[in-house]
Length: 123
Image (cartoon, rainbow, N blue to C red):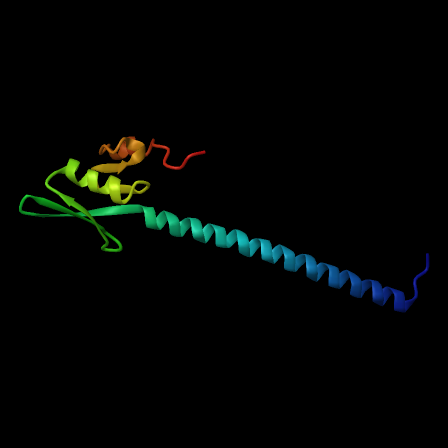
């Protein structure tokens, strides 16, 4: 099959157009995938709290160390946990050197080693 110069040029243009469309579709999928990852990271940032505890008198005040958001207060751990359960039922609270608290731990403070074994996100 012999192609004329015009047919070769036309074929090259068609191939170029099709390739540009395919690249555009691939870019669109990559952008959506990237946005999904960004959304997941934002959600994780919002629900995982590195806790800063301030004690004034008999009351402990819990804050998110990074955002300074007030999380809860109480006279003891049980008081604070009851507030956390009501306000943030699906959040995770990490206390430096003491471990973590979450629904998955039965709302009990567990050691850092044990906390690492907890499945925080369902399969």
